[in-house]
Length: 96
Image (tube, rainbow, N blue to C red; front, side, top):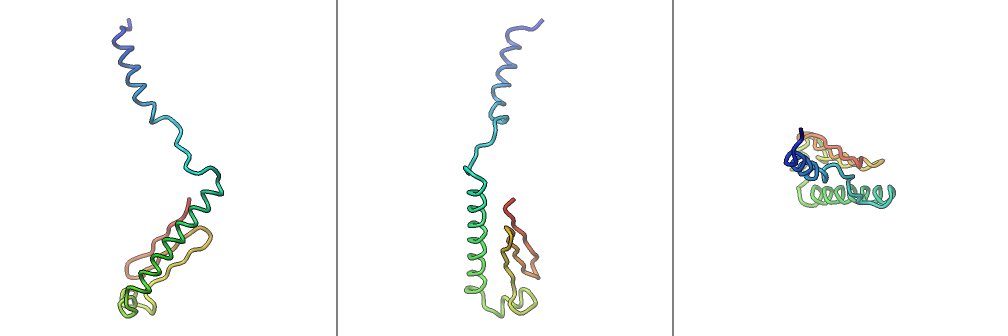
């Protein structure tokens, strides 16, 4: 037999789990808005890193970090931002 206390406890647990089962909030009204914001964000990251490496690190330090002329490569194409520092690795950021 089920008691009232058991039913109340089950209902309490179920109600506390509700937020985890609700659909996620929508941050963008359209897919186009999402793509525009994602592209703008990746371009901002690209511009910031290029500024940092080009204007704040001496060419010889940058070249020694990479072991080659120029020292770094930052490229944004088709929604993918690739950041390459040969002696430190390559990072790939995409908007998906």
